[in-house]
Length: 281
View 1 (cartoon, rainbow, N blue to C red):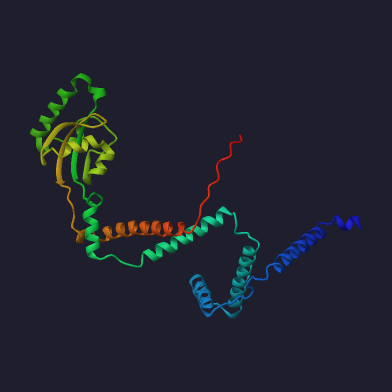
View 2: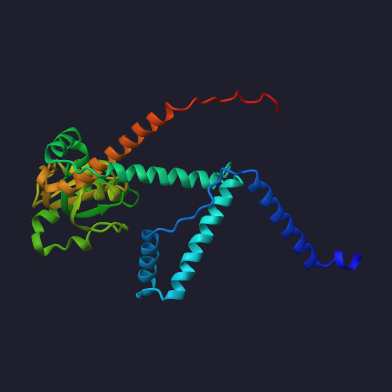
């Protein structure tokens, strides 16, 4: 008898029997639980469609029966889990439910498309979001203060005159000091140039003429001689030019506001009690 009780298989069977008994007792006490599972025609259509998307063909009869059985098994596991309270105090399930609720609210808020009048008003109220910044195409020659020291300003003036007088005969790539930044910039927004040289450098570009070498102007690296080939001034575009962008931003903000309003209404249904923190260390 002792030998039988020490067998792993016997332990497994006993544990299974206890679990089965526990389920039976718990279920017996929950007579209100719905024990009818209805698989609708739409459920079957969804199962078939999911199968066809995966396997590029409709399911055979045996495969469909297997899909139906799996759905029934999932529904039973779901209901039994709820009956046992497995959904309670589980942070993962709570986060998933919150995510599904917020996605549902987003779907609701996305139903209505804004008209031109609403978008135009939104654009006027948020011009800074959609303002097109200045763009520059330029060439720069760098002078390193650490290398040139006292002759920095004199060298800059001499090189500037050389570039102005030399025209196409002077190759800017062969003069000045080396730096990891590119010498030539294609037409680029001011923010791109900011990231390379710093905002002080870009601010000074707005005061320079196009088509002639000028400088020196300063950056965080040192000083530069600059030739602006092309400049496109910043401006406020019309709605027709950027309608998709304005519509996306408008819908994003409206969805957020609607979610907050719905949450505020839902919160009014609840009485929230926050217990004081324990003073015990």
